[in-house]
Structure formats: C-alpha cells, structure tokens
Image (cartoon, rainbow, N blue to C red):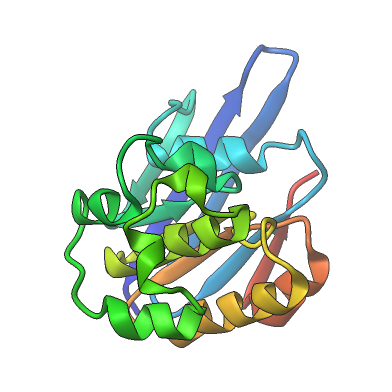
Length: 190
C-alpha cells in the first residue's frame, strides 16, 4: 500500500504550558479512512493546520501526498465575488463533474451562482465536489458534513467512501457514530 500521509513524532504547542502534541505519530495509506475525534480545544483543527503547512511543528516530520481539503465552514473556503464554477476551475478541471453532481444532488445552476446565493448545505456539497474533482491522494475533511442534515450527511459520506480508491481520507469529526460507521481507525485526542 502507498502511504499518503506520514506524521512522525511531532510536537507542537502554542506555549510551553499548552502542549497539544508531544511525540505524536500517524500514518495513512491509500484506501483508508482515519477519523480524528475529541472534544473542542484538543488540537484536531491544529493538526490539519500542521499538515497543510499553515503551522510548523516544533519537532518531528510531516510528509504528505497531493491533497485537497474540505473545511467546516464552506463560506470561508469560497471567495465571495467569483462563481462556484470559476473557483473550481481555478484549481482543477471539470472532468467528470456531471456524474458527481448528480450523486450529490447538486443542480447545474449552483455552479454559476455566487457563494452567498447558496445555502450552507449546498455550498458545502460544492466544496466536497471541488475537493473530489482535484483527484487528491489525501483528502482532509474537517467536520465536512456539519452543515448538512442527517440524510445528506450519510449520502455524502457514502459518496466519499465510494471514491476512496487511490486516496486516503483523514476526517475530523465530533460525530462518534459517523466515525464508527466509516473509519478504518479512530484516533482519539485528549
């Protein structure tokens, strides 16, 4: 199996008194889903910031394959003055989008809308569409279904699981049931 994320012995804290990670390691392979769970404030989102390179670990190494990410708040991941389609085309081709849109219950006119014209759930599904169209080796999901109702949550996670070939998924979630349902391994941060 190909490793798409390899975190070895990282340490990180905002101050010497607030240490979030001390000698933390995690490995993720193609075809795997790992869920990161834990209460607010334990470092789940900080872990993603470290993987994305937005923060630097004090010690240890992080190696990742090409990735895309879906954040909890879809409005923060789209520029307000460009259409959804323009923003998808900025980072990837639209190849295969029709089939994905149909599976996600998205309508073509959503793509030509400005982000604020869509509901949170519609825009989050567009964010997931963009991430999947990028064909990443590593898909980082930070509470990706929190803007969706329960039925859409399950449908979207089934879609992600269906497209897992060739990529690994690292999922941050507060939803223990969702983690139990889809993850090969659950990593609990305390």
